[in-house]
Every structure is written in structure tokens, then in C-alpha cells.
Image (cartoon, rainbow, N blue to C red; front, side, top):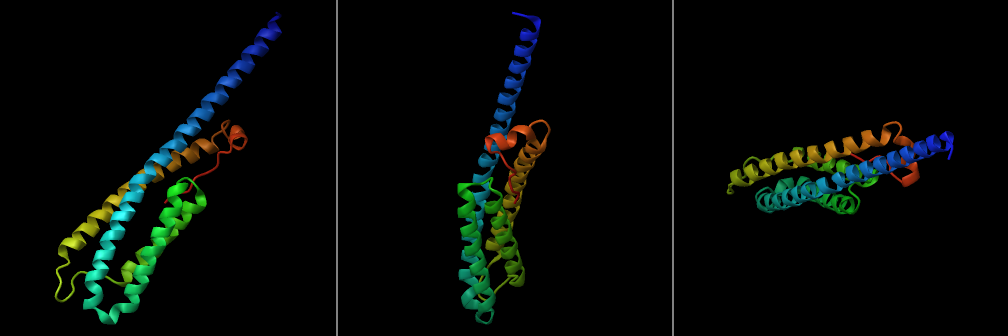
Length: 175
């Protein structure tokens, strides 16, 4: 065996080891995204249940706010549907973007119906639970988004970007 063949074999081996390492890193980072979504999903479900409780309490007490309550119920259903879609592919840009947009619509609907107190009903405990749920959801979203940002940075990094298309890796969406 000549020196050129040994050097060529070493270069090919190093390139192969680098490709395997880069692939494994991308798989690990994509797995982190998948692992970070269930806590977000769980917090969405918990908040949805709390919002439904709140709406069940305030709907009879505020008959003049029925259109805004209906809008809030529809926004909750939209978030629930978008979350179910994102649950199957948490890193997919389209699924996560639709969830983020549905969440924005829900936030606007909640802002139009600020409920601090309702005559004949004590909402202090429910509002406190909703506030805690919102804070926990924000924390879970931050962790998910951090995992997405780390993955997206790795996908755009040179020379890893050279193998991204080869193995079907693409950017992920943030909440």
C-alpha cells in the first residue's frame, strides 16, 4: 500500500466518522425537541380545562358577554385542535406555527373578556390557578423553544448544513 492510499483512506475514514457524528448530533437535538413537547402539551390541556371551568362559571352570570364567551370557547377549541396536530410532529414548522397562531388568537380573546370577579361567584382560586398555569406553560414553552433554537443552529452550521438535505433534516418551528 502506498502513502497516498493510506492518506486517502484516512481522509475517507475521518469524513465518514464526521458524517456519523453530525448525523447523531442532529438526531439527538431533534429528539430533545420531541421530549420537550409533552410538558407543553400537558400545560395546554390543563389550561384548557381551567378555561372551560371559568367559562362555565361566568357564562350564566354574564349573559350580555355571550358573544365574547363564544369567541373564547372557539379560540380554546382552535388551540386544542392545533395542539393535537402538533402532538404528532412537534418539530414540524407548519404544525407549531399553527399552534402559535392559535395561541395568539386565544390570548386576544382572553384579553377581551377580563374576568376578575363575577357577581355571585368566587373566581379568586380559579384565576390564581389559571395564572399559575400560564406561568408554567410559559416556562415549558421556553424550554421547547430553547431545544428548537439549538437544533436550528446545528442545522444551519457549516459543514453540517452539507448533510442536512441528504438525511432529511430541516428547520423546526418555535412556539
